[in-house]
Image (cartoon, rainbow, N blue to C red):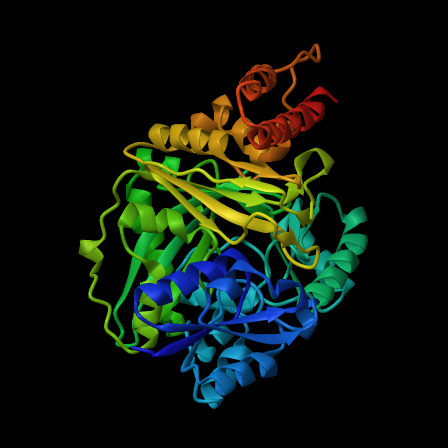
Length: 501
């Protein structure tokens, strides 16, 4: 096992990895930019190295600075977390060339599935179903028109590199194609330094379901089941769960999707942790979408249901240990759910809400897991993704997991900045959500859910009751607690404004 590992990331995922290193008796090295000098990850790590100014292009995305930091501190391996350089083939290759172990798949595997078009080609050759569409980026506007006509509108333009909804545009008619292609290509270039865009058929109201795979360097590869990731805003997941509600009714789908994911991973020569993402239509037909060659943000729900620590296994596999868990050993117990807690304002289109955290009250108790990267007094910078923490709950059933999430959110307060806590409290009470009627356009439909006369929905009325109860409870609290409850009430009222428009 390694003696020292550098964590090439920031925020809650850096803290998560540092804790895993501590549990395995491994020394940790954090890296930080100017604005992260006082971050929780830096405070927790055994060592920390400054790597540059706030812009990620000058710090967390600088391969040479991170590899140099590993060399200077004697780190034998680098864990990339997710985002930044985690799926960068050149970074994985640079680590290998420098004699530092990259805790992830080999550069060759990243090359095979890192590009969405390359991954589609690989998946098709491996026998996994794919969404109808091009397998190469479009060369010009004429080719785009021909392809869209053959596929049939509506179509989806997608960046060949990267993810997170960047470089993605829906096109419903040919008259809009040229402008959409120009915008998608421009955004892809800005986000990933690759303007390549391809076209595929738009699957209407799909579920977004992903399969976690895990493999060692000795050819042993398994899957750990699915995660339902359909609750999204602007193509970014915000609530994830395991198992998927559709699998509770049709468990045979897990085996079919799991085998499709393993075929793709085997074809790529994959090892370590990775995820194959799929779309599922209303008839339960599923299609391979892409492969993420890293740890996922939502990995805690898989850990809670399977009782396997993915970060521990990432480290052990990278160190050359064999995977001792066989497919028949994987058992899914109960249900888990995760909410991504962001510093953002749902009432203002989920705009980021950076600033100083004036007070913090975090939930705990049975079935609660919180992967947090912040503390009272920490200033949430405006330079990065505003993810504060991942709140996850486990229960014997999906209903219990939801109830525990509601309880955890009621105990969670962040003063000084806006968060999406009130938004989650409302979603969890929604009848369609509780019934598992999910798809990737759920949030847009949810915000539009007013009756024909414009009256408040039952969900909105429940929010009003929650605000009144919170204000009443505040009268019996200390001044600090009162401030936190008042802030929570403001969040809830802000959400109500959106419903009442």
